[in-house]
Image (cartoon, rainbow, N blue to C red; front, side, top):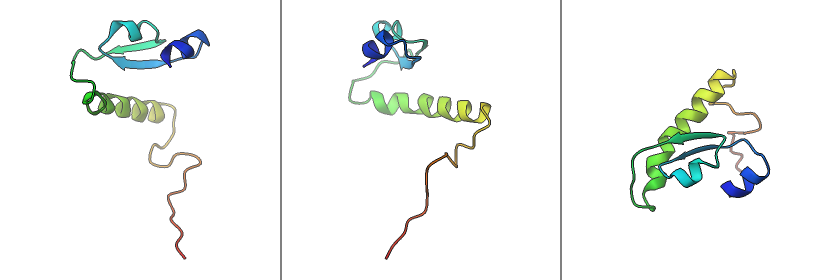
Length: 76
């Protein structure tokens, strides 16, 4: 997917420890820790969430109230 996005000129932020995929990113964030592939989502989720939080607040958005998301559950 990163290759297809790179070919289309998309702006991408990649968090990884592997140089091959980091070279395709517009904004590469090298994370030096290496773990088994099955555990990597657990390791990379925190920096990704922090990036999303700080990017939203820097743009003046409330990350707890995203546009278009309804947090109301209707029951009948």
